[in-house]
Image: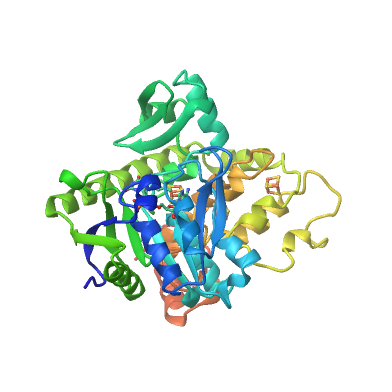
Length: 415
Ligand SMILES: Cc1cc2nc3c(=O)[nH]c(=O)nc-3n(C[C@H](O)[C@H](O)[C@H](O)COP(=O)(O)OP(=O)(O)OC[C@H]3O[C@@H](n4cnc5c(N)ncnc54)[C@H](O)[C@@H]3O)c2cc1C
Ligand code: SF4
Ligand code: SF4
Ligand code: SF4
């Protein structure tokens, strides 16, 4: 029997799932079992729409339909938890299974902290994520850099540092580093992302660490909770999934890859944050970029941290109605309310019609706030900074300034 902390290789015996699955089809087989056994009422997953650049969310209730959701779509840059809040009543009344990338898992926790989602009713199967690519940019990259008609591509993946495409007539790979230096490749928030293995989900599934004869044919599973262990054990007992202990060498490789991804993310963080400049130069840059804002509210509608019924940016006392671009107050309100908890999901940047690098501005602030207050968003149910103010921590912070004012040594505490 699998238990929390176990590391396994897993593969399905279901022929239909096997055909479409990315690896061992464990994720889809687990969902099939979850629906059949009524562990969940529905599964929210991603399926291919018009083509492989078109990732669509689907809600599946019939286990016969679940095979259509197998396979990874690397152009699937969408975020699922806010859909659960908006359209599924925050999973208040239904038991829901959801396949999550790291950013989805983080967003689930942030919405749950704000009581927008009932996590007791949600099972999360996490997939490791090395990054996703915006669909339009992916098409352009395939045409420009690979010299291939994007409509002839039937599979894409990122493997061993290469972006690989299979198309009518062959396959080609180009180093992701090279593509990213030229402005293609993963979304900029993905380059800075360090949530590579989503251990706050119930199971974390991936490719990293599967070696030997199982390479490419099994899914690596880290069991992260009791809920996850129960689901896995049920599916194995039913015979839809087989498992074996992961190869110790595979574990080592997986840890090394994760570490290398952290280093790369740190490099991109430094690169991107440095590009903002310092002092007044930074302020000028942010004011100038955000002055393209057309007040469509897309950044707010899609941010997993924004949960308010009426946003302060719509209060005429703060932001003058009918004025475009809005005063800088519009952005300041977002910074003040979100920056401590931003999970760097990138939705605010990707969905901005004015192409304002919103996620970059917010993430740059979040990283500094995390250093300052030690609060890590999206990993557990620890409350947001201002929702839980603690006397001893407050006293210690003041003492650390070596003064009796919040005025000096705030950024360089004396202790
Ligand atoms: C964008 C992306 C990047 C990834 N990068 C890595 C990586 O670098 N290293 C690694 O070890 N593993 C990575 N994975 C995970 C890996 O590709 C497999 O998804 C995972 O190992 C499960 O394999 P499987 O055969 O059991 O899954 P399957 O049975 O094929 O099921 C895959 C599940 O993922 C869901 N899904 C597909 N696309 C998305 C999406 N864009 N967002 C959310 N859910 C989605 C499907 O709906 C399905 O539920 C990535 C996955 C995605 C989606
Ligand atoms: S933000 Fe992180 S977890 Fe989300 S798609 Fe990008 S790399 Fe993956
Ligand atoms: S501010 Fe942007 S990047 Fe941060 S959580 Fe909100 S939508 Fe995601
Ligand atoms: S998405 Fe862009 S244009 Fe729309 S309100 Fe946000 S910053 Fe302004």
